[in-house]
Image (cartoon, rainbow, N blue to C red; front, side, top):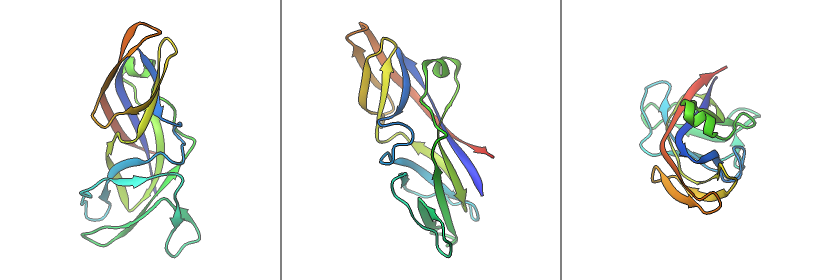
Length: 166
């Protein structure tokens, strides 16, 4: 068993608290990423989608998980289980210092997560307190204007990493 923490960062201009629309532990938010087989090293061609709200039984076990998948090349089974309660929003301070914010923890058995995709809806707030919701980051960046704060807001240079944690 290896745990991988998905961490994100971005350049935030006049924004803070970037996170999934209903928070990091939203049961309906979908996490999209590719997987690398722990046996043969093959990377999946398409992104795998996981949500906290959907779980299934682990074969030959009493437990549940969020993904059971067989490698198309070596046919090894693997599972990925999401562990909520570890994530937090990306703040302006994180962005300015180049730090990554933890988003979600994954318990991976037989697979390693790689190449996270920023799909789904996100939210952030301006430094003046204006809430920006339903942000689509699939294009890699967004630009808008904060009427209340009378300043431009922007999210760009999105990056994600999966760090091994204990």
